[in-house]
Image 1: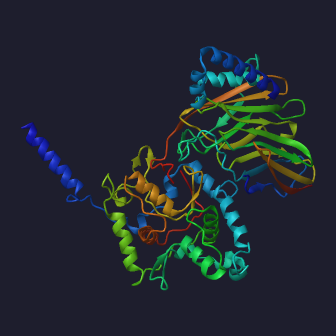
Image 2: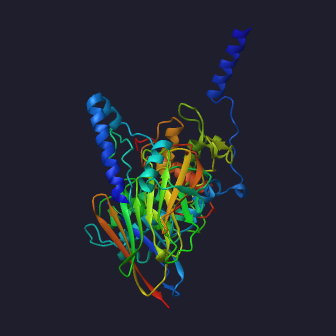
Image 3: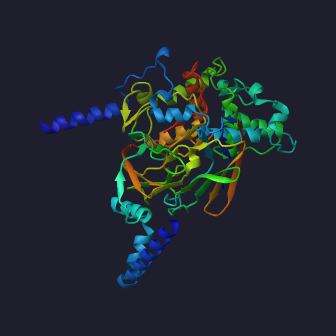
Length: 107
Length: 163
Length: 263
């Protein structure tokens, strides 16, 4: 189950400025390699897709593997082109998605 | 690119299947149950899946990982590529690989000129002391790589799974 | 000759094991006390200090949501009685464990939250290490961040703090060692490659990288007892609460830094 997502986007930026976006989401990222108390491996359960869109256009995309630590944290950069909405979406291997948005004002 | 990886995988699986059928199902079963650890060879295979036959030049890619890691469960990792990130000269994708985890992939990132900077950070899992490699694909079709050696210590008092 | 030497060694080992030869376990002088964050790597410390990167903050935010959630037969949320946690819960975590006259013994913060749930909110108690209970505890404890630990040390609480001290300084388990031998006598040195901290519980509940999730001081104590090859006390056992009480008293004056990040 994809838990709470934390997202940090600067609320304002100058046009053309390169801004940093930081995000973290609550998820166990079960690798599928851990042995449970029954002696059987716990099935894999990971978030495998992360997409950032800026006013609908994809500006960053990542495919995650079991080697990404639990409660995935990603920080990356994007150019502040215009005011609008930055949307981050996390999708797990079962296809469930969580989207978190933030508004940005670009002068 | 992703399609190419899928096609290669399928053909390898088919080869394995037929080999297994010849050698005996039991042998194949045993291999399937035990998580095969990646080796430097499997990592090279995974890299070739992504890069194909193209040459990989060393340089321009920097991986920042603490040299000694307290716990392999969560290792901060920053990858940066020396690139102006303009509309005509930018980093298209960065793939990160490892050589000793159960499987060789860590993360695959797709960028573009809108990124402004070819730089991202995340936290990764490392099963053992090993090398981590990042390959960047540039807009001009060239591939560049960087790698780092990491020592992973374990916390002294490790909880057992009976919690 | 060799047989006599072997017998001497065996007797010495037994005497050592039986505690007849004591390794001096002395309290760390108050001004030499250092938080456990001093003994972790720079990257782990950086993770703790950055609210945007601290994985424990996810639980704190979950706790904030639970604080506002209506529950139980009363249909009230914590907020309905306690208002803004930043005001009403400020300093609370710094005072726990605390002696409860109604029970005649101390309770820790998790137990106190459960008492409030069952007695006041009329909702079900949450089991120990339950994700929601940890989130609520982390949220409440976070409101005391930066404040000095100030558990009450008086005639009522003294017997329990002393009982906790006896557990801390007493040998236990197959290895027949005491917590104090590592954490009072040998802090700062290394065990299996990792520095031994003083074991000052300033940041609980902590996000432990080994657990890949938030956990309580009781969980950490049980881990350590297992590692010492001693039978760990059950969750909520009076011995664990007494030990928590002693440890918080031992850390008096040190600043709360919940949610801490530890390897």
